[in-house]
View 1 (cartoon, rainbow, N blue to C red):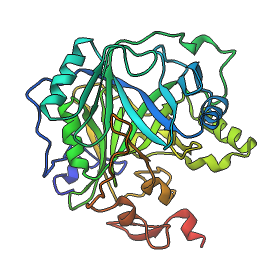
View 2 (spheres, helix red, strand yellow):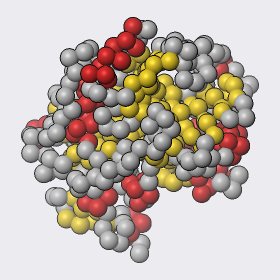
View 3 (spheres, rainbow, N blue to C red):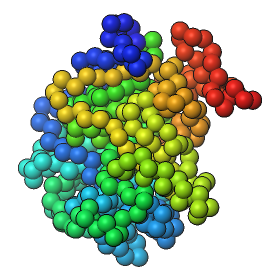
Length: 380
């Protein structure tokens, strides 16, 4: 991290700056057309191979509410949501992501989205009646990074379940919090998202300036999406928030009681990045779902950017626990607008897993302390 000064280092071990110290060697041109005004991540459309198994996982186990369903599709929402859905489960032959969907501020922002992406030469489709139930006029695109995005304003309102305490479960999922996307070139992805009005809140780098991941937001939380370095385009995870840590612990207890503990991939624990309490699960198709709580407010215009050293073992888990290799390597493929899998491009920059995890699968290094062993590694 050559651009960071020692006086910018905080007592917690990371650096803060006024702007994200991330520059791309291969930037995507910024259109002259204004970007749409994006409010927040709103929903994800997942393709699943076994609709009944997915319904059991998301509804019976995790407690999401069914807005409507038929033999091919299930529309789900979280407790605090009033728009039609936060998650669409659509039956298909291959597990994949069909759309990362964002809500925009006004109907006119859809015109801006069309002009913005057409100037970039991207494939753009608009459907005045919407591409899914409950969503009206909307635009779908494949962005220059290969991800399928949707932008919409019009939506059916449904009952917000916050007051239905008789239906709440101990692990209540209250809102959709963020997406996480895997891309080979993180700086290039960051620059493009900044052209859409996203702001970086945190990132991970090394002394050579390699950027391993970056967190970006539109709503005033740590992120609406993150760009994680790896073979892509792929989806790393979709995340739902709970109110408190005990809700996450309740989910773990429920999975144990149901003899479904193999659904737990990582956690529970606390992130260094975002400071949030977390749990990572894998659904029946292997799609990764994070459950997350207690990150922080980022809405001020001079909110500082946090940069972590890739060799700080507390960046991914504040308690220094190891990250399972599958968390670094696995992800869900994404589709084009015709439903075909997008080709996956290999990352050529350094791998975060390779530079932080030793051959034994447990060790890590810190530049100022030499080689260390994870807590589990120390017992072997």
